[in-house]
Image (cartoon, rainbow, N blue to C red; front, side, top):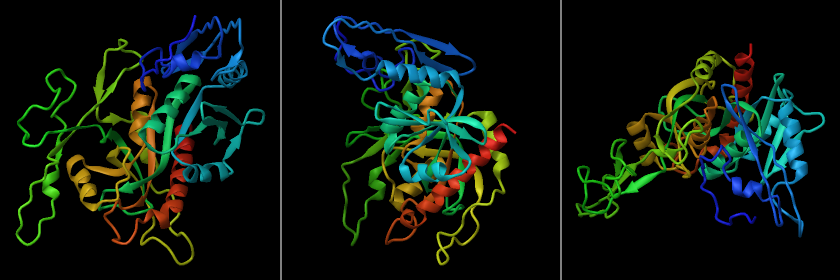
Length: 383
């Protein structure tokens, strides 16, 4: 029996395994037999119990028998908190912190290009994974985390641009809702807000969330006329396929809430002392704060533009703008796993200095502050 070469969809609804066909390609021979058993305990986890029968060439595939044994061994000690972080400079402060203690016998497991670090933080069992830049990387890493391991909650942390004029660089914000603002229906020139979008009639797209009119941002000088052919961009919800839904029956989600209990616990972090100086000569104008806010947004776009920053804040009331959080939120939501994100503000997303992005100066400080809030949250969560 040969496995299909057709790639699976990014967020498959098939028994929680995002790339089941890929995972089953252990050794390509005459026969490959895979089985997966799904457990549930207020959260969803998948333990892969795969049986492999090989009768010919013994070509190595993605998953080895050794990897399967390691996954079983790790899951026997679960469940874990899943700590999801975008990049190495955001991960570094956690790994360098004395509060993170790697597992004595199995400190990490490498799988499908990801390193899953196993250990304890504040005496709580954790699995840490770095996603890489952007929504696709964040979604893939989170899907692997939740599909392979026994995870009882997802905590995401890192830095972000700031769209809120009432907050400053260095503050750590904890939004109650996250949205992906990079899924668009770009309307044809000549149509307006009252005109139906392409493929709107069959439910693929909607005008309910709102749009940005590009022509409003044309810079016309000397009384000249301007015709902007880019027209309107309509924001769209994500299609999701929850684990407790009907396979291949889509649902839609734009604003994804964090877990209620997590958010209530996070409110108690206020007052935590955070870093305010990069060095002796470079300090913030006031001490950074930990603030719960209403909304944050993500897209695979680095926003360093004052006009778009202002639009996102006025249209959606978002504070942090980043490139991963909404993806982690969506995958966690699909799996019905509790989720929350902590983002330290590292720059003004184009709304500050005209010369350069502030993250080059304050990024390391912000990353450290995000880790401090993460550690305090875990301590309070299990106090």
